[in-house]
Amino acid sequence: MRLDKLLCDAGWGSRREMRRAVAQGRVTVDGAVVVSADARVDPALPVRIDGQDADYRPHDYLMLHKPAGVVSATEDPRLPTVIGLLPPRYRRRGLFPVGRLDRDTTGLLLLTNDGALAHALMAPGRHVDKVYMVLVEGPLTEADRAAFAAGLTLRSGEAFAPAELSILSSGARSLARLTLREGRHHQIKRMMAARGHEVQSLKRVSIARLTLDETLPPGAWRPLSDGETALLRAPSAALYTK
Ligand code: URA
Image (cartoon, rainbow, N blue to C red; front, side):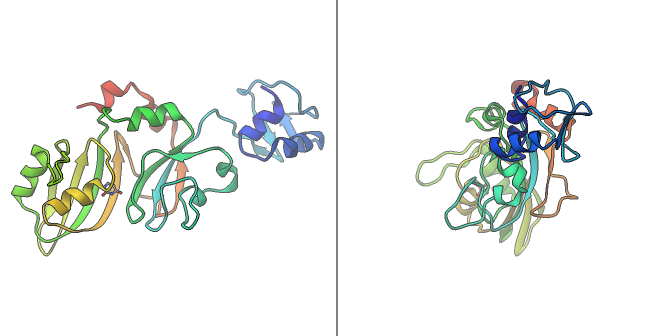
């Protein structure tokens, strides 16, 4: 791979800026300064720019603790986006959110530039478990649990797949853990509304076997570990389908 392309793809700047950086002797490959931006390098070798690991990898996989108030989009004319929470180097990497959370929903959001993985996780029919903590108005009951388990059908005729509602507390406000295997627009809010409950807050805590790192405060992110990435890459049928 050409050195200027590798640096550019790794998000360090434009091709032109990278050619200049290389010519200025700011880039090393395997410990040696390389001044030709056309040089072909093995991406497995350590490449450094201004003393920092260039950290080239074909794809990025980040876990974001999505805060309320930002939209799950790469661009928005009016509102802050989840991509805007990342440092500039990552903003140049073509990352996008895997599925959407509503603006007021918090919790686990995966950001990647690996379209195949995003498809494997989110395509309809993949049945990947997504687990949410949901706080609603009013008491949740066994009848609610049974209705979710049976698969809710709205008055409009729209039918949802069975979902697992585990009631953690019930009262004027109730807390539950809800596992969905599909991801439709405002799904939980609409399911809860159909049972007469208004959602007060919603937080996603896991997707498939990947769990939100609770040491990340809202708005913070980190790359997935190799183990976490491997979990997501494993054959979907074996891992995600129940
Ligand atoms: N269901 C919703 O209603 N909103 C979300 O953000 C996710 C699931």
